[in-house]
Image (tube, rainbow, N blue to C red; front, side, top):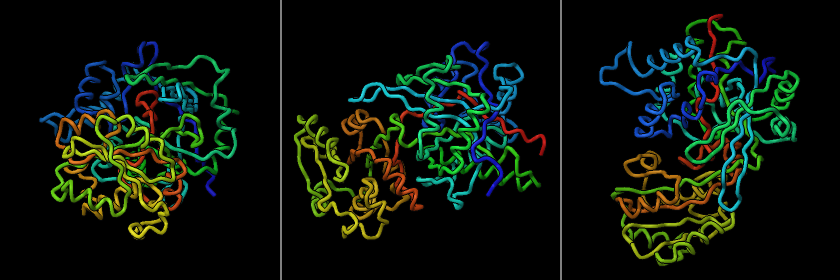
Length: 445
């Protein structure tokens, strides 16, 4: 058993609140959800916005010695020298709460904390992914890590609670005023506290020792941290307690009342083998098909969302049928024995996205896994209203409206060592980048 802690406090680097009076002007969403338009808006919002670190602009004149990564490193080092960024003097854990509205539930709070996670290869079983990564984003993030030797954005990790120890310690009912209390453009309130009490920190560390971590978001960044560690190892011997063995992570309890998973809808575009009437006829072989007139949209959505978790159901809207909506329900909910699902693993058969991608996209539309991920043919969209607008205004052949997966289904897939179809999960809200950074000190190596 390793003598090194799996969870560790750290000396976070933060914006100097004496210099940056309004932190909302310098934070940003995760880099991979930022559009080019939003990138420019964040650049203009504040000269010290974290966008310059996590997603720098590309220039036509970029070369080996001057590019988005070297400019990020320059700003990162300069902002520390100018005391725009300061490093906390003592190792801490940073408690992070997000408060937001949920339709039908009102205001809810997701509670978690930021600390360092000792890196483990997936084969070791202590950290489990549920999504497939691609090489492009990992190569991009590795260049940034090599240039800056830091973690700018936390990975989102989930753990299964065994007791209320950690929840009680991070509940903060009686804790002093937060360091940061801001709201983003979506109305999500983000609050950050610094926890320095060594006894409380050790209680959290001990409680987290044997927990398996499921990566909710940040698969590319976690694998990048592994690649960075291996790259450093390749340059020479490093100690077992080197900071390169750790990565910045946000930890949240799967059972937290504020832990919500929202659906991600699918939009089929320009698929040459899609013919609406033929497709509809094929669907009837495996699904019960209910038809709704377009002026009954609210009834359609209510029935879709009210379907029980055991009912595998999708909403279907096609630009080729402007008069109707369609509700598909798998005609045999015994998915374990369903003849059309026998060649995928049982946990994926119980997952709506698994059924859609295998039974409809692969078998009926003859789309390979690569084609199902290709933005030329398939778009993924989280906002339901925007999805409707896309059908009405663009060349969307077919919109598939999804129900959100349940946490137990996500955990079952991960425990089985399986990978979910693309964009199966959408954990809301996203974590902000810029609240606290992890500087990887390698001077002693």
